Amino acid sequence: MQISSRFTLAVHIFACIDTFKDDYKVTSDFLAGSTNVNPVIIRKILGQLKAAGLVEVARGSGGASIAKPLDEISFLDIYHAVECVEKGELFHFHENPSADCPVGRNIHGVLDDKLIRVQKAMEDELSSITMEDVIQDTRRLI
Figure 1 (cartoon, one colour):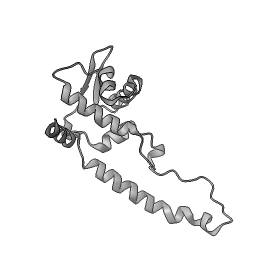
Figure 2 (cartoon, one colour):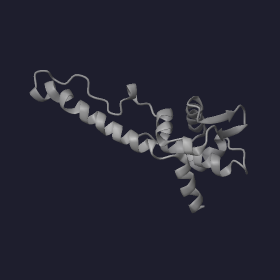
Figure 3 (cartoon, one colour):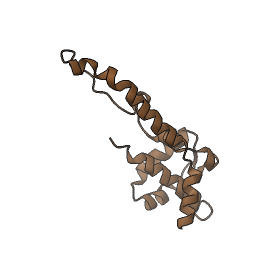
Figure 4 (spheres, helix red, strand yellow):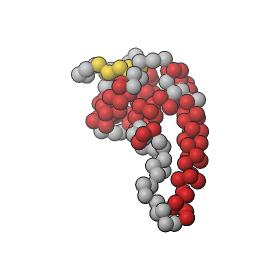
């Protein structure tokens, strides 16, 4: 299992917006140069972040800005904004295990609670990290 790169791209976008906000108009083309990703993909992610109330995007070439204080934007907020997790479930279960097999007939009962616990642990950890943490680490390195 692998979370798509939209999550790390979104974090990268936040870091760029904060780092360069005073010196450049942070547009999708500008962000594409830093991420080395097509501007169309950047615009899609910016749209998702905007819909979640995390960034503001001026029409045309107006650029992007962060809509909330960095310490109020958690990794979980970003994850929810950009990831396509079906019905809020991290793990997708195969649809029709065989009822004729003793494992197939019981696998949901065996795994469901465990998978929910794993997802909750991941979400708890994501909620404990903020963009402020990332920005502070980034500033130490640049």
